[in-house]
Structures are given as C-alpha cells and as structure tokens.
Image (tube, rainbow, N blue to C red):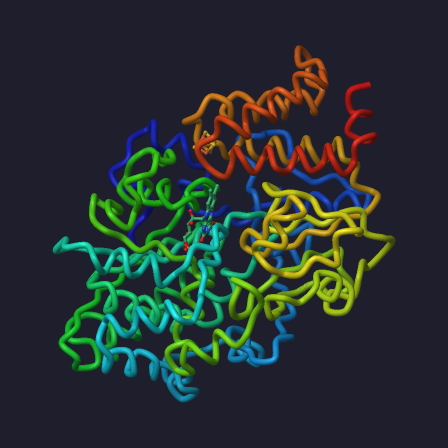
Length: 487
Ligand SMILES: Cc1cc2nc3c(=O)[nH]c(=O)nc-3n(C[C@H](O)[C@H](O)[C@H](O)COP(=O)(O)O)c2cc1C
Ligand code: SF4
C-alpha cells in the first residue's frame, strides 16, 4: 500500500488532517452527526479545533458516531431488479472463492473474450453515468482514454467518499471489494491501461484492509498481474490511502495527492482522460460507478437500460441518515419519487416532522417537503435547485436552526477548501466567522449575499459553487429564518 503524497514535505503535510491515519477514538463532525446531535439536544464533542475536525466517518445511520461504533446499516433493494445490493444483502464476501461461487469473475471472463471496443460499446449503450456526483457518461469517459495513443494509461478508483451523509462506497468496498477489482481490470482491458490505483480514504480503515486482502487473493489466483485469466492481458493494482482531506475526492486534487503534490484542484482542460496521473491518460471512476460494471457485462446493456428514467438509467444506492425511522442503504430505480424514498422506504422521521432534506451532501441545495414529489433523476432534481450528488441523504427536523446549519456547512467548506480560488478561500471562512458570530465578524446580510455571489461566480470547483448552492437554497426556502440570523 502506498500512502497518498509519498515524498511530501511539511507544507504538503499541513494540508491533511490524518497524516498518521484515523485515531482510535475519533468523533465524527459530519453533517448527519450535527443534525442528530441537534435532534437529541446534545453537543457534538471535540468541536473546539475547527482545523482538526473529522468530517464524516461514514456511520450516518448511527449518528452521532465515533470510530468505535461497530454497528452496521440495513441494506436492501427496492428496485425491480437489483444491480448492486443483491449480493450484499445476505453477507459480506469472506473470500474470493465465495465470490466466484456466486458468479463472481464471470464478467471479467466474458469481457476478456470480447474486443476492448465492444466492452466500451456495451457500457456506452447501457447509459451508465458516473455516480461520483457529476453524472458524466461512463462509456464516453472510457472511450476518451481508449482513443489516446499514450503507452502508459491508468485506471483510478475514487474511494474518497467525503460527502457527509454518504456511506455507500464504504459498504461496497467492505462487502464486495472483489467486484470492484474485477471492474477495474475490465476497465483497464477496455481502455488499454495495465495499472490501477484504488484511492481509499483513511476514515475507512476496514475498507482499506478488506480491499488489500482481496487484491492479494486475486493476484494469487491469477486475475491480477501478468496474463490475467491466461488472456495475455496484464493488470497491476495498488491501494493508496488518503489522509483526511475532503477535496481529494475531486479528481484533479486526487491525482495531485497521489503524485505527492499539494492537492489543489487544477483547471480543466486538460481533463484527466488526456493528461491525468503523472501526465498520462487516466480513467477516474467512482466506486459505485465501477460496481455497476460486472452486472452490465453479465446481463447486457439492454437489461440495464430497461431500468431507470429519462437520461438516468439503472439504479442508484442512497444512504439515509439516522433521523429516518429506517436509516440504511437502499437500492432504488431512477424515477422513483423522493416521497416514496423518504416515507415508504425510509419510514419518515423517527421523531417529529421533517424540516428539510439535503441530497448529495451539505454542498448542495436543501429540499423542502413541497418538493418531495420530485423524481430521483439528475435533471429533475436540478430543476428544484438541488443536486443528487453521490446520494447521501440527510433529513433534519425543527431542532436544527438554519443559522446553525449555515454555520456548520460554511465551517466544513472553510476547513476543506484547497485555497486555490480567492472567493472560496476567503468567502467560506468569512461566512463561517459571520455565522459563528466571532468577534470582528459582524453579521451583515448584504455581505452574506455578496459572498454567495462571488462563490457562485468565482469558484473553480464544486466545493465553492456547492457552498453557494446550499446558501442560496437556504435563503430561498427559509427566507425569514435566514434574515433572523442577522438581527
Ligand atoms: C469537491 C468535490 C468532491 C468530490 N468528491 C468525490 C468523492 O469523494 N468521490 C467521488 O467518486 N467523486 C467525487 N467528486 C467527483 C470527482 O471529481 C469525479 O467527477 C468522479 O470521481 C468521477 O467518477 P465518475 O465519473 O464515476 O462519477 C468530487 C467532486 C468535487 C468537486
Ligand atoms: S472552489 Fe474552493 S476547493 Fe474548489 S478549487 Fe477553488 S478554492 Fe479549491
């Protein structure tokens, strides 16, 4: 295993909060834990040092959480056909043998008997879009890397899942790392890459060890390394451990982190598909995106494309926070209405009534009950000023005041900003001070509006624009309450 930022100096080290890995007794400061503590009327602990907070341990179903909680979430399928959780519901895969016993590795076998171009066509025709947040078509991304003439290409699995509220990738990596490695080999074969890296965040130590063990087993069994399944195709895999930085989930920052550079976001173009890791064409795919690949290859693009709605094909995993009566990870078909998800599947709120819901983490718009008839679909959700993001769903009740919520989210954004753009570096910190009512930071509504405008207009990545999207939706949907923060 390679630590992210190998060869780094003190300046780079200062960027990260978990240079020494996850402490044994870490407390979570993520948004699901924040709203749970409000609902329970307790204070989140260890909140004094803003720079050293750990934002999300991926245990939002049991919030407020600590690294010592060993509970596991409910996992269930509500789609007509399960693409993702079917094999996860009963058990974690304990060995490669068990995975193979249940049809595992048959997709790799099938893919290696096809031409690389046909594998890419299959993914293109399925309509699969990236689940990391942007919803970019996966087949098109693979095709762009396949077209590049470079001798060296890479496949990177983005296992940095930093959005507070999301714990989907965590369980995919812990329960079935074999399927993810199978997908990475298929991707490497399709695009002509013989090296893969799995970048996994330090907050998920179990996922890291399960992934490493799976990789060893797959190497011994002849799937990884030279001559995979006697096909002549060669694929090596390494695991890179993150160091506690949310922005490293953004693909250009992630690449810099792997290269040992200070992980600031880069201007695109060039895209990673042209000049990615060490300047070579690179596919960066989210964990859940990759988890879809074996099913598509085994069942065909048509079976996959038959599921879904509009331009959002297939199914999506959603993780519901502890304030729902039934928190857990649920697979649903795109097109399902949000009220079905929140009330029928999630069981509504455990106590009281819902004030708002954050889809896709804190850096996206808040949705209010009037909007819950919206369908689960990238485009439909955008129409109500929110984003699906990675599918982490955080519901909050009346005990969460909007002023406190804005303070929490802006402090998160300020702690995690990479500092490259001035509006984000200064604006998020100013909002955080303003809403914390720190001395010298007078709450000023016009200043608040100006900060949001500059964040929206002058941010290079989704951290800054997401902060603006969140604040604007709070302003629009809780107008009087937001105004009261300035009185
Ligand atoms: C601030 C920020 C954080 C991100 N964090 C993640 C993350 O934790 N995991 C992830 O897969 N993608 C994350 N992304 C999206 C990645 O940049 C990239 O689009 C994604 O990994 C591509 O994979 P996909 O096409 O399979 O979605 C983030 C983007 C931004 C702007
Ligand atoms: S918006 Fe913020 S996090 Fe994104 S590149 Fe700019 S400074 Fe970095």
